[in-house]
Picture 1 (cartoon, rainbow, N blue to C red):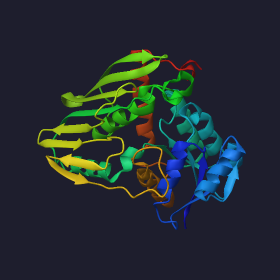
Picture 2 (cartoon, rainbow, N blue to C red; picture 1 turned 180 degrees about the vertical axis):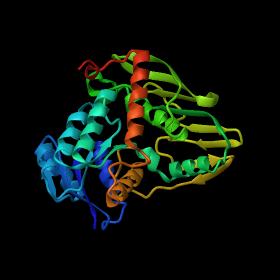
Picture 3 (cartoon, helix red, strand yellow; picture 1 turned 90 degrees about the horizontal axis):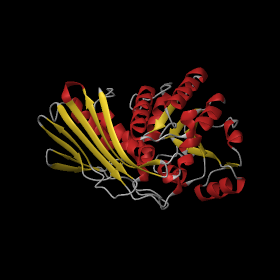
Picture 4 (cartoon, helix red, strand yellow; picture 1 turned 135 degrees about the horizontal axis):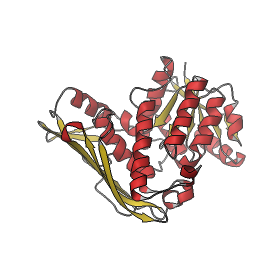
Length: 333
């Protein structure tokens, strides 16, 4: 029986998620409804993606009995209220990253998921790519020995995009793209909390335009990342161990190639049936399939992107923002 998806928001990322779902077997995944703040937006989206039901409010989607799980694609400053709406209606949720604006909000979301006994996962899609699965297997097998240093970079000139730079929309390099670099380092070190963090950055419009962050872990292991909304960076990542290296040569947040000790392997993605807004977006299929498998097993969270992972990410992001001086209105509530 197919997993029945409801889509919350008719924006660009929701478009790409729908296109990604269409690369999976229709007997496994079906989009049955979409909701937007304006009915005409939902209807246009539904027509484009052949979705049978369109709603002009999120509340209508929350009360639809024919939905197994809701994908939340609204901007992250609205994640808390939107997650609570659906989970209080006993809906399972896949919520876009970052899960919320700060640790306080993340804790509230996690508590609601537990109270309502529903599945919840932060949509850190990077972790579910076949290349990422291979990285975890290689590390578990000791392919590069003991990991000593992890470096990741993500820089994309985005200052023309309001969502990227507007403080009230949760703008800033860390929450928008730096989370990919941070989650990668945390994934490599298997969810371990670093012993200390040092962050420095450049602020514009009250949010971080560029950040450089170092994280020291136990046994003198180091992580470092750079993220920027003002500069085009190589967008690669490297794991250096005592016996070798693993490198993602490009697009580290949606990897389709790995170089392991000099040998390159490709992990091609399926072609989209409609043009995509973002690179490699058909790779969202892997997180969707993870959700399906968790629901079939009756799980309330994924072991690959667990609630503990989301909480640790939030705590680290809060500390990084504290050090560079980025404060959102949600931090003062």
